[in-house]
Image (cartoon, rainbow, N blue to C red; front, side, top):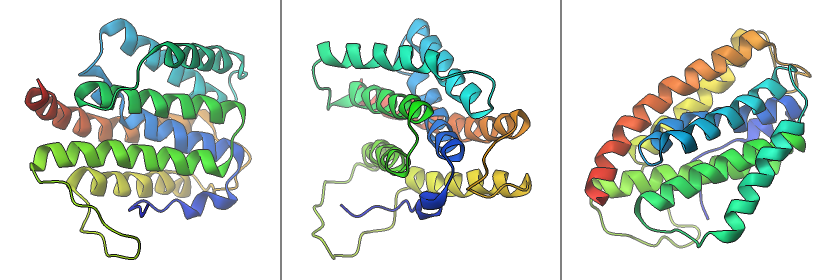
Length: 208
């Protein structure tokens, strides 16, 4: 399936930068998650993602991430597939969190690519719900229409991720990311997440 995101820059990235990217994308979605779930679930998601960031900054081992990932996998094994409304968005955000946790344990480019694709699926669905347009199937080779506003914003957010690294003097193959850079990556991601959260309120209202 054709995609708007292009994360080819990460093909030569170090494990720590791959994990930072996965965590940044998940961080962008937490404000959407906040509009769907209760405080306990949100708190658990935030705490789990914080552990991924700690691994990126070299301030923790990955054991806590492994435990959190086991909880996600156990929960997924007893839940039915959710492909409608708010449950769909919540499930995709948990997918993103799970991928970030997996990357903290075993980083590779395919996880980062899957993270970008999952985020695009989620945001495309939000764009579609807000636009009120009918679904159109595009065959391979056909030109896609311009991305919706949220997908467009996320493409910019990816560029902002790389810009934070550049300003810190880091290339994608950097062997380490300092706590200060992690803090800036989280700040930038949260600012984007606030935009997504405000949009999610409109979608949830329509869905409800």
